[in-house]
Length: 356
Image (cartoon, rainbow, N blue to C red; front, side):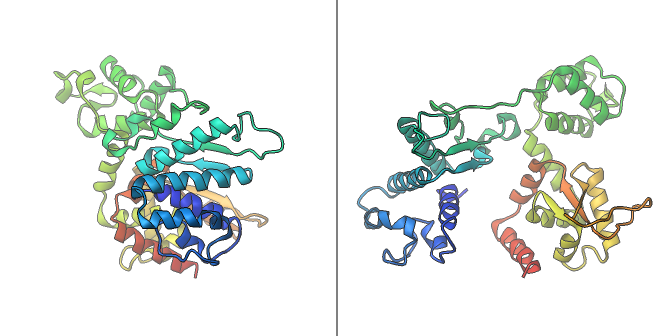
């Protein structure tokens, strides 16, 4: 992503907690063209001199930005207890990763973060980071977020891989068979590394490549050592499925990805361009096609405080909103990130118009 984008978003969020200052959006980008006077957000005023020096080019711009973002964000985290969630840190730009690392080092030195030696008089904050394992993405697509995990004072919580018996059960269900040939079983256990979604996508990929049929080696794979076959990353497997979608379901999926991991059937219908789905029934057909490809699924949630449900024949009863969700957050991210920035921006504007 764009350099310091994560830092800008975090600063914007922290400033917005102090009120709806119209200058917050501009001030969150430290090199923005905003006045350094009384209109500066209150929390930013102590840094007016540093901002002026940064603009004058007194030091390297990148180094100056990194240092000032780290100082401001760390100071704001000290002022009040905050739980800062760095979700999907593996997708952060390297400049922002450097800032986060500097903040963590300062937190360890001063002991103001949760779990440190903070005194009862000083409010404590917590920084929580999540990231995906390396096999999900190609190495070229991932930032250096791993450096955060290696810093002193950082507690690392790691989901253990599934046991072999669980992996085998998922593979059997995915392939619709009762037994796996030994080479197939070993290949799935070896390549999936116990990651549930990768087990499913790997089984589908082996089948689509004609290497496996019904859990057994196909004729094509008789002379192939599956252990030496290098499958794509999980990200690329999902991307390949998305790329092969027919036009209409592809448009539906891209629009849905802008609405989020979980989305309303009604909002999605209103967002679609003309000619994609002429009626609710046509949209449901497209969604059910995507459901058959394990990309989305129906997710029905009752509105709070309102009665309702679904009748025996599946008709929606008053009080229930028909929602759908991507089968996995990764599916939504792959679809969303596969679109050009201009296309995404246009869809976001279209979605925003639905709430105007």
